[in-house]
Every structure is written in C-alpha cells, then in structure tokens.
Image (cartoon, rainbow over all chains, first blue to last red; front, side):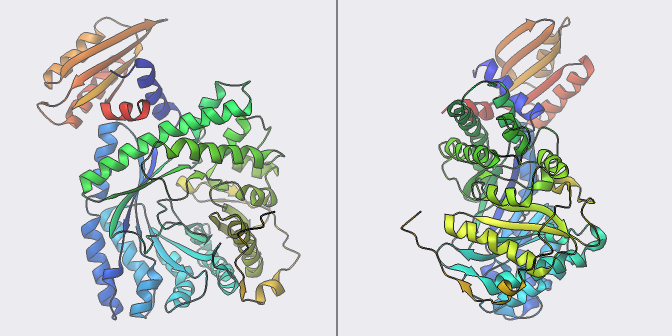
Length: 452
Length: 89
C-alpha cells in the first residue's frame, strides 16, 4: 500500500491547497461539417458536437467522484470557425449561436474556436469572422474567440493587429452593461498552440485528429505550500521543489486524461501542465513569487522569479506525462489571481512589468483591465508589442485586455467566477501609436540565428 | 479494483468498527489498515477491495460520507490509482 504520508499529502493538496484538474477539453474537428449553405453547416455542427460530446460532462463528473479530484471545467474546442465561414459565406454570428446552443445542450462551460489564423494574411472567411467577433461575443455566453496574428516563421500581420484592436474595443462597448465581459472571452495570439485546452484561447488545430481529449492541470496553491516548507533554501533547491511538485500534479492530469479517453472512446491528446490561478485565496501564482522572497509581485526580481517558476514547472511536468502540450507553464492573468489583483491595486504591478514578465511566462498579457477611453490604435499597439515578444522569442504570447467602458482609473470591474475582478490599470493613453498602426503591412519574420 | 479510505478527526471509541461496518454492508473487503493517534488526532488509512460491491462505488462513498458527518470525522474514499500515479514512477 502507498505509504500514509503520501496518501495524506494528496488529500491535503486537494482539500487545503486547491489542487484540481482545471479542465477536460474535447478537441473536435468540424471540417466535415462544412457546407456551402450556412444553415446546413450549422445543423451538421450541432449534430456532430452533441453526438461526440454527449457524455463529456457525465464522464467528467464520474471521474471526479471515483478519484476524489475536482474537475472544474468541461469544455470543447473546435476547428477555427473561419474555415467553415470560408466555405459557407454568410454571417459568422450564426456559427457562434450554434456553438452556444451546443454548450447549453451538453452542459459544457465554454466552447472555444470562434477563431481565425491570419498570421500571414487573410483568406476567405477570415475578415468576415473578425468583423463578427464583437457581436458573436455579445450575443453568446459560452463561446470564446481567438485570432492568431503572428508567428516566428511568418512575422506579424499588422493589418490583422489593427482589426483586432478595433474588435477588442467594440466587444467591450457591446457588452458594457455586463461588465464589458465580451473581450474577456477574446484572445489575440502570436504562435498560438493548436492543442491548448485552456480558455479563452482554445481551438482545435487543423493538424489534430477528428476528436481528442486534452487535460489542463492546475495547482499554484500546492506549489506555494511546498515552498513554505523551505524558507531558507537557495534557488537551486527551490527549483527542485517546484519540479517535484509539478511532477505530482501532472501525474494526476495524465491519469485523469487516460481514464477520460478510455471511458469516452476518444484518443488522449496532451496534458497542459499549467499553473492556472483562480481568485480564491491560496490559489495564486503571484503568491508563489512572493513566497520566493519578493515583498510583492511586480517589484524588481519578479521576472527572474517567474522565469525560474515557469521553467521548473515544465521540467517537472514533462517526465510525468506521455504527451505535454498546450500552453504549459505559469499563467499570469491579473484579474484571476488574488495576489496580482492586490499588487495591481497598490500600483506595484504595472503593465510595463507585466509585459516583461510575458517574455518568460507561458502566455501573455492576460485579463488586464484598461481604461475605457483607450483608443483601438493603443490596444493594437499593445497587441503588436506582445506579438513581437512572442515572435522573436519563439514562444506563445497573447493579449486579453478588457477596456472598462465608461470607467476611469481607480474603479474596478467584477466579472465573477473564475474570471475574477480587478482594478483598471493605467496606460500611456495620452501618447498616440495611431500612425504606426495605420501603416499596416507585415513585420517580417525574425532571424533565427545571430541570436544576441 | 481497490480504493483507499482515509479517516481523520478527534479520536473516539469505535471509529474503526463503524467504518468497517459500512464497508461490510457494501461488500467491500478490507485488505490493509494502518492507524495512528497523534495528540488526540486519529488518522486511519484503509485499503479496500471494491471489485464486488453490492451497489456502485458512488453508493459506498455516500455511505461513508454520511457516516463521517454523523461521527464528526473527515472521511475520503478515493480510487487507489490516484495515489499510485502521483507517488510512484
């Protein structure tokens, strides 16, 4: 029998330290649903998704009970809808409404994939889809959207960056009565992964099989708690502790993914070993950094501490799983992390520091609430900066900012649930980036040698 | 198929007997038991065979949770695989 200490450690992780499986995400290809008639296409999508995902939620709940491990979200990611819009034409919002109907029928929390991949340019359906994003996010609750505007191999599509700045702003305006929730469901990527199970950026890449199960694990609370036992350890030892903890967390994800794939009769894809914080006390990535010795997240040293954390999580996780993928690493979504919300309120965590942190974390500028008066060009410029960091460093970066329409610095937005709440963070709003964004064109792909 | 039952709380008379009785009612065979009492805190870990349960696993879990509430102990019942996967390579 496994020894008592290990058994009690597992139970403590789940009970006291918020260890959970953050999501089981079913990736589903909709390519075979494409039809020249958009209504036929939508009907095929509804039929395929409700058939394939019928048992996703009950199976998830059964695994929760059997293993005593909470599985917070059950979700679906689908083929970028722009590909279907390319075949059918018509108003892409119809697709968003179909996905919403599916989510209500099968009971999943979110469906991701109202997406377009435009890093090198626009194909049929792409511009139409991007134009439809604000309305699609306003008329649905469970549909998430993402657009990939850049990649290390293709460079950055600045025409798309301009459109996305406008889309983010408009999505906020259309949902201003609901705490501007629209852009909280919209991610603008550079180097987007095709197998990411986490929302809002999940979509089912075209290199993926027809149907697949991905698992996203979490556990910032567990890592922090492990570190509290080593108050005087040096950073080599800290990295080791994080690796060991990440290993255990990922093993659990691997088990859940394997069991879910067996029960659903669907191949197992990847484990995304991310430290995904929640607003709950004790489930914060910022608190891990502070446990390492920073007075507050955002002060000098934060980037280095985050780099250590992100790398150690990956090193610990890769051996624990047969296939690792997605965004794997540490997330830094401001409004979803109790420690970051606090640091943003006190002014210690600024957007400039967050931008630096995104060069070493697993994603990017995430869940940052910005002043409502921010111009679309400024939002585009933020996206361009972030995409440049991802492009040059060959990593995924993303922007998910929420313009708080009608609100000023000092006020807060409250989204509720896992999306959390947070203060409006100041930007360089009085200095324009308009001319730069208006130029359009593409930023060429960077050199992959002569690295200095 | 095996599961692990853990019972944690203040030590009183008859905890082992009550937990064992619920296992027996559900036809779960007890394979191994370890228990300790440290500063009045009782901790018991029990390995049970759940291959031939009279009802399903959820029913056994519910019965043990109900017992836990009744006697003021924290009882968990989890499939053995989760511990094996986390703590063994």
